[in-house]
Image (cartoon, rainbow, N blue to C red):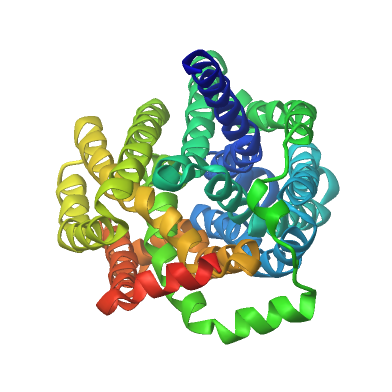
Length: 437
């Protein structure tokens, strides 16, 4: 009897690994394109938002970047309800389709000099499509991972939702480094910046094949009743306190993530006046750091609980984010930027490793995708998605180059408040029990 048991166990592990890789593939595309938009913001500003004022062009570009996030709550509700009704697998294929359309549009639209005002309008449309899709992509993937994970390893499994994003950043940074060391600055400005977007478009068919091979989760198939749209809205409305608390939990994650990844290349180049290569190397190292801390802290949260990690790292962020940024801008250098960004990565990765799985646990199971997605989308639309624009504006208004650290501090305050709300006097245990019902 021992041999068959071992054989079954041996087959189960690769199957789980394959499911994780397949379900997170769409996350890879989303973050790959999002990161490209942030890193090549100065080139995009020149191509689609030309102006006599470089700061104005940059703000318009980051405003377009942020506008996509305004579509996330709408996507969370509409697509999230669809996923909770028809299944995780079908829903994830639909989100990938919409996301691919936005990516293709941004990659191939001609510049302002060629088609005039239609150029920024089409780029904006591409971002809105991406935002609508992304509204449920993270929620759909996180819920899928939570439902297919072993009961005592949910934190570790769900952490790979964010882990796949770090792989995308690593790939984008490597491509950017190669381009900036082989093409001239003028070539990069003219058309070289489009190459990574073309690469993103080319991998879309491959991702479709992967997603179509997904199986539906057993947890979804075992559910006898799948709520109608009115029932979903009623459940979300009656659980509005969970939505607010969940949104505040995510603010810390989304603000810090977009600060240390999407905004870092622009911050290093435009604010600190470091080279593009330096900024790319730092961003690459951040992604490696994130990829390490996310599963480590997700696994740790399986052992010691979510609360200690969420509490500890929000407090640590409040105490150190702005001082670390102030130390960096006092004497900007590659070494200081790498040190500070790796510290902020440690704070983000550790918090997020516990936060994402915590959010899947407090949302009622019948509306888990739409509930998770709505919390995440509201936080991103109202706060995190505009982090590059807010950081740029804060520096302009205050003259303090370290002021983006204050924005991260604000995110940590939101995370701490939410943790206290969710985990007060055993409230989290009650919510988790109710969510599982």
